[in-house]
Amino acid sequence: MVHTYPVEMAQNFWTAIFACASAAIIAVGISLSTAQRKTDEELRGLVYSLTPKIKEDHVAWYKRTNTLAIIVLTIMVILSILFW
Image 1 (cartoon, helix red, strand yellow):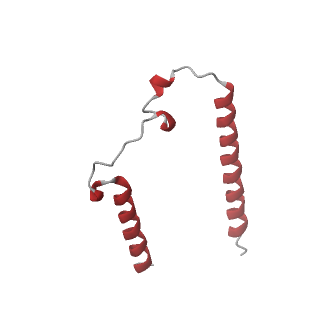
Image 2 (cartoon, helix red, strand yellow):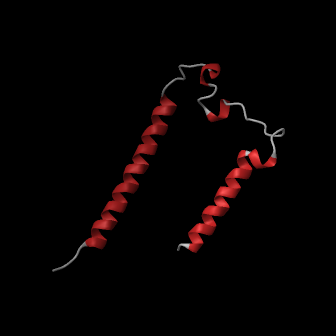
Image 3 (tube, one colour):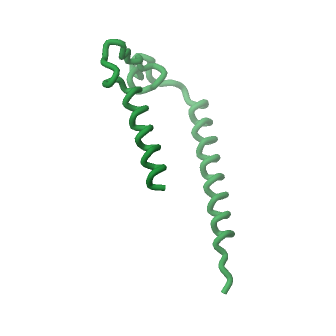
């Protein structure tokens, strides 16, 4: 009995690449070909570039989002190494 798993896996991989690439091309094409219907004020809070950035200067260092993210990332890396 001959197993064809590597061939099937390669076919699945290339199918996923083509599907992702075509979806990205279609999304960009539709975005560029349609007009903006809402004003920037209506999109504020929904679109990253229009959302005001939160200043955390007055917050204690242990309550800042960047500090907590670094701590969680460090813990995750340590646990990944320990349980590898």
